[in-house]
Image (cartoon, rainbow, N blue to C red; front, side):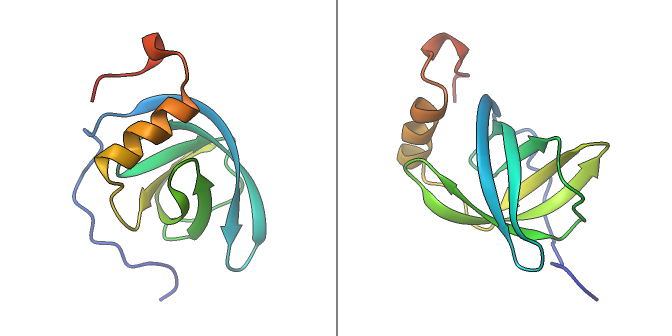
Length: 111
């Protein structure tokens, strides 16, 4: 078997925040991948215009106030892909990150 063997509970109900954040994902086999994060939560994120990825693929991205964090691809649909962080982001760090990624407070969702 290849890729991550994830046993994930459904965390899609977590509050997702819309963002417009281009980032470079570090993929073990494919090198650097340009990704566009379109929404994010404390548990993971979604990219649109995803490069050819597979479930279980691991990427490392750099987020404001969080730094480098690893995430696993848990779903793919058309050109979108959803990733789960390998660890949960602490609330205070998450709030700081959202403030950096979404500076307009009217567009932020309440946690």
